[in-house]
Amino acid sequence: MADFIKTQNSFANGAVAPEFYARDNINGLSRLENMDVLAGGGLSRRCGLRDIISLRGPARLIPFSVSDGEEYILAITDFYIGIYQDGIRTQSLKTPWSYNDAMHLQYAQRFGTMIFVHPDYQPQTLYKSGDTFCFREFEFSRNDADMTVNMPFVKFDDASDIKITVSAHSSGNNYATFTTNADFWTPENVGGRLHLLTRQWQITEYISPTQVVVHTNGTYTLPNAAVSDWRECAFSTRRGWPRSITFHQDRLVFGGSRSWPAGIWLSRVGQHNNFDTGTGLDDEAIFISLLSAQRQQICTVVSSDSLQILTNVGEWAISSKPLTPSVVDIKQHTSVGSYVARYLPPQKIEGATVFVSTSGHDIRELALDELGEKYNANDLCAFSKHLLNNPIDMAYNDSTRQLFVVLADGTMSVLNQNAALGISAWGAYKTRGEFLSVAVCDGHTYVATHREDGVHLERFDADTMTDAGKYSFSFYASGLPLRASGHNATRLRLRKIVARVLNTKSISINNHQITLPNEIYAPNHPGFSGDVSVGLLGTKNDCMTPTWTIHGNEDYPITVLSVSLHGWYSV
Image 1: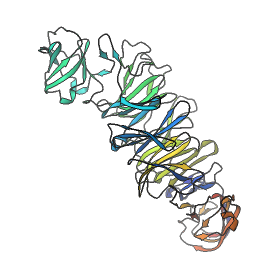
Image 2 (image 1 turned 60 degrees about the vertical axis):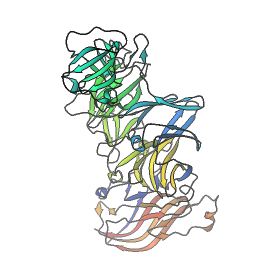
Image 3 (image 1 turned 120 degrees about the horizontal axis):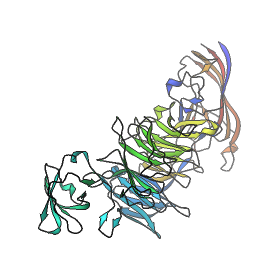
Image 4 (image 1 turned 135 degrees about the vertical axis):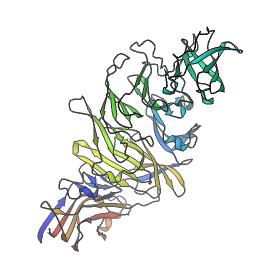
């Protein structure tokens, strides 16, 4: 057997999957739970959670920022939005969405106004007026002269062979009956708009699958033949509403809908409720439809250096500056695809757009190459895919450089990321109960948690050692199987494990509780810094199990800078 001393002084790769245990270039762990990897590569027990307030029920959290430093957390529950500031619910507003609907809501904020979109509901607007929040349907602008609405109109595939015969109606000169040459209309068409004979018509009554009554502004002349050149409003109860939304170059952007999944609609510059394409002037609205060999369903749109369009099969970008109807430089850069089961808001991390891939097991980083010409979708969890299973929410805290991903099983996977220092470390967070949602507001990370007494709004707090003021939590860091001199150890005898710690009040190594000076348990004592060790650990023949584990559930801080193994091994 060969004598060895092996020190690991960086844990920069966090928890890695077993298929990487035989790699020599991994500064990783086999388990990392309720601990974070620090900028210097060491480990620290995670912050506790401070209880803020009880919530109405399961909630999705969204941050809402107003100028002058006003920060709010929105908690969307069944048919309500709760608005919270400084731990107080300032207002509660009724909404049309259930909690399940909230999982598909997308939103964009500009100044004190936030617009929400969902493919099954008319867009809604939340805005702050004085000291009060108001909630109402998003409205497209109207033209006073002829009462037309500046909505986009398209020709849907199922209408390509439909011809409309226009006939007079007894209600008056500005009413008509539209009769189609095949079954086409449904009761959901009522309230929708059509464009034909150079004017807009609103459907007021459903008669049959081939007939509806319509109304227009002013009188009209009956055509001599059936009309085939007509279009339907892109958004309606029947056709669905925008799926995604962002602001880009002072345009409001809608991406995809239930009936036109590959469409992109951009408003007029500075007129965010005007989608009339007009005559193609530079500041007028734009309509684009993605064309490729594969069916594209837009999952979300992101405003960055370019307008990024994330679909179910790839990542596109419009790089035109400025973006005008005559200059649209659009192309597909990568073919990863985005998660479609629910909306997981992409996050901006160090200039890149981070999103969940279509598999649900990858977190990708969409970033320009060194020449600034092409986007690449780099895998941020190549070593740790076992920690990404069925994500349901995501948020990034720029202050702490942490990406939080809530999973369907009630746990969280957390990425500690610092590219400049080579840190890209995934770990798991667990609590007594379930994490439901996460949001970052004013540098603080908030979570909705389901505990034994209901649902709570809570916040990670560096001064808190427990969760919700009463729940202790266990923490674990386990090393990888031993490799020495480029070989896998098959038999191992550990003589001693030494951990170098900083400001630590309690630590256990391989189920051996370390005795530290008694005075460190005083509330204001900084804790012990130095080396702690355990010895006489025996022989291991199962060298696929961790060589060391640091753990505990005490409500004290712990920081580990390095772990050294002393012993003998054979290969």
